[in-house]
Length: 231
Image (cartoon, rainbow, N blue to C red):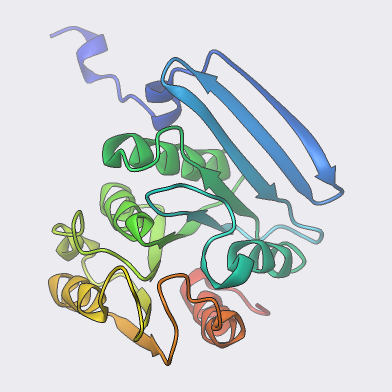
């Protein structure tokens, strides 16, 4: 068997990036665009403003894509908070939203970008369809992804959640979700065999009213899971 047969293909190699560009939107926020034959992958990278922790976060949206996440821009707010404390956050905009395989490659490539910057431990967060993406990429990358957070997740695509093998799983779901019932998150938790599920009272699929409540839970959880001292 040839050496090529044993070669490991990385997510960025799978993407087949033909060209890329990036620009600093603010002193701490970088916009990245990667052009591929199967679409444009773009990301917002919140860069640390203090000494870098060897830990980072990747976030992804739902079946329609997007960069803000749930909770009235929770991903942006979280990125600002974490970057100020030395933790980079990469917010992914899919090449082909709602294409599970392609979206998983996109998020795995984002993890690879963080690893290339010196990060050793990553938490992946996903909203709705993105919850399944987060779970699947975490199962595929057990040596680097140390935890998963889902928001209003679907259960389809999470059939392999048992492959998290006990890694921390944090779930949020509104009890008034008009698209996916709370039972979807309960199913994912049951498949994983563990998890910390928070039901957000009187909130819907976008968790519009729960940003601060979720941050109050997320920040100490991230501190524990990523091994930080001051998040």
